[in-house]
Length: 78
Image 1: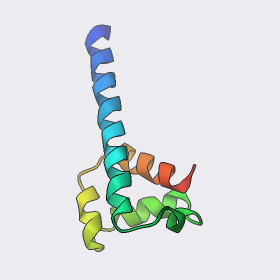
Image 2 (image 1 turned 90 degrees about the horizontal axis):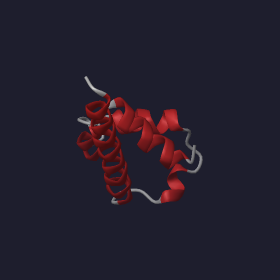
Image 3 (image 1 turned 90 degrees about the vertical axis):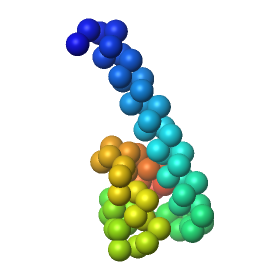
């Protein structure tokens, strides 16, 4: 793969992660206040995001590990 194509894929991946992060925040804000995450670390938030037993969290099942980690890190303030 040439550098030009690799660079294009990296930019696409960055936009997809940013979009998922933005969607994650707005999706979380439908049910949660920002202060609910104040005492949680990123690992706890990530575990809760992945818990499909919580019906609204099923929407996160298709996110990549990196996307879930980015959302959890942002919500935890890490």
